[in-house]
Amino acid sequence: MWKTNLLELFPATADRGQHPKRSKQQTILLECWLSFMYALSFHTDGQLNILKLRDIFDVLVELFKSKTNAQLTLNIIRNLCFHSPSKNRISSNDSVVDVLLSNLDNKQTRMDSSIALLTLLCNNQKAKVHLKGAGLGKRVQHSLDKLSLEGWEGEKKYKRCLEDVLVIMTG
Image (tube, rainbow, N blue to C red):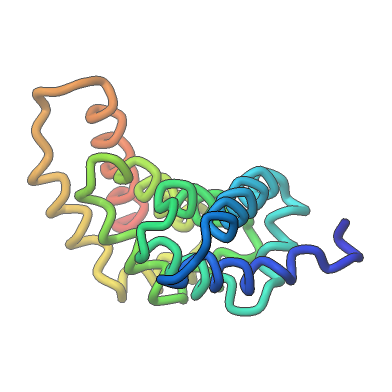
C-alpha cells in the first residue's frame, strides 16, 4: 500500500470534500478518507506515511476549521503527535499548535488537545521551547483557572493532564 502512493490522493479529496458546492458523494468520500487516515494514524508506519504527505498539516487544519468532521480530524492530529521523530516538525507548525491551544477550552475536544500537547512535550526539549514560545504555559494556566472541579470524572482527568503539561513546561 505504501509503494502505490495511495495516500497522495488524500489532499485532493479533502479539497473537493470541503468545497461549498460539493456533492453528497464527495462528502461521503471525504468521511471515508478521514476514517482511513484515522485508522492508519494509530500505527508507526501509518504515522510516518501520513507525515510524508505534502502540506498535510495545512490540509488537516483546514478540515478542522471548516468543521468537516472536526473531531475525527483532531484525533488524527493527536495520533500524529505520538510519532517521536516528527514532534519537532509538529510543534513548530503554528497552525497545528493554534488548533491545539484553541481547543483547550472546548468541552468536546479539550481532552484530545491536552493529550496531544502533553505528548509533544514528553522527552522533547525542542518541542518544549516551541510550545513555550506559542504561549502554552499561560493558556494552560488560564484553562486550569477556569476549570471547575464540580463535575464528572473526565474533568478530573483533564485537570490532571493540564497539571502534567505545566510540570513538564516548568521542569
